[in-house]
Length: 254
Image (tube, rainbow, N blue to C red):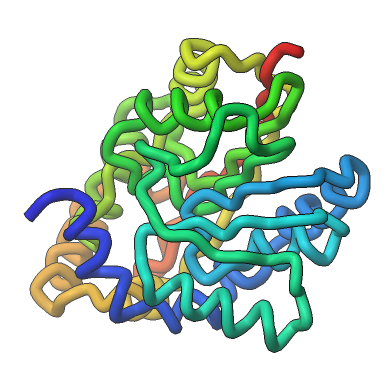
């Protein structure tokens, strides 16, 4: 099964869960997106891998003129369209497709945002090349995602539990990797900050429909971790834990 089919298999049936998930529906980063839209007043904005659309709603609430909610899955786009209508956010439109081949002309957008999606992209270099192509000179890209620690042990632990939970996981990148990939695509890094993202184990696996076999493997993996990793990820008795998340803003030269 190829990567896009894996994503469709694991997220299509779980799409509604991502509308109500507190991890996705809440967060100070959404307020930051709304404030960013108020400050920039972008004419055309793209929400890449929009999922249930929470970034799109924040951008529209902030005054973005047109927001394209773009995703691989019809199920996610149907939720966004219905929720945008419910919230009277008429500036949100939906479009389907992969991030590695964007169906937009060059210089189409003033602002591009991706939130909790990039760790599923199967070809990051192709995706960032496409982002740079469709973003206007001087435009801004904001990446919001779980990021891997710079320490190799902690990085390995994170990728292991992410893949056990969700077979469509590709990689949570380190901030240093993001800096390198963005620079290679022609971006300059404007701002970056991180925070801890608490993940309650039961809702974390239920949201994506992780199988019982994989849940057992997750428990066994958590139980076998060294003390340093248990401390870093703040692993509790029920295997809830905290990941690092980051806001990375990059710009294209004018």
